[in-house]
Image (cartoon, rainbow, N blue to C red; front, top):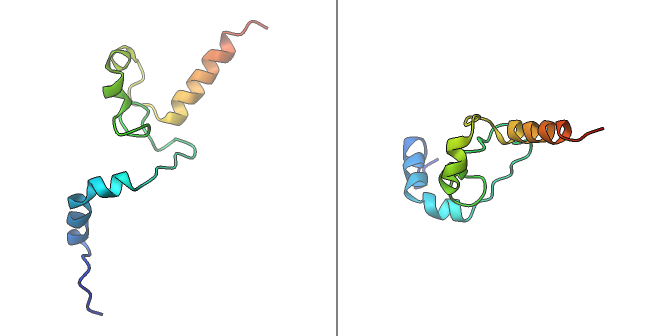
Length: 84
């Protein structure tokens, strides 16, 4: 089978060459959020939250947490601040 389409290493070069087009026409599905870093990955818009909210990032003690971990921490904080 002889094709003119890139494959292997050439495929990745082709993808990187057109990464802006691919990124603008792609969609990210977060699901559980366990594989996406809250501060470092571009999961809301085209800028990581560490760059968009640099002052908050500097204050954060949990810079390498996933979205899932951060949401569980926030839920625990919310529940612990409620007086029963």
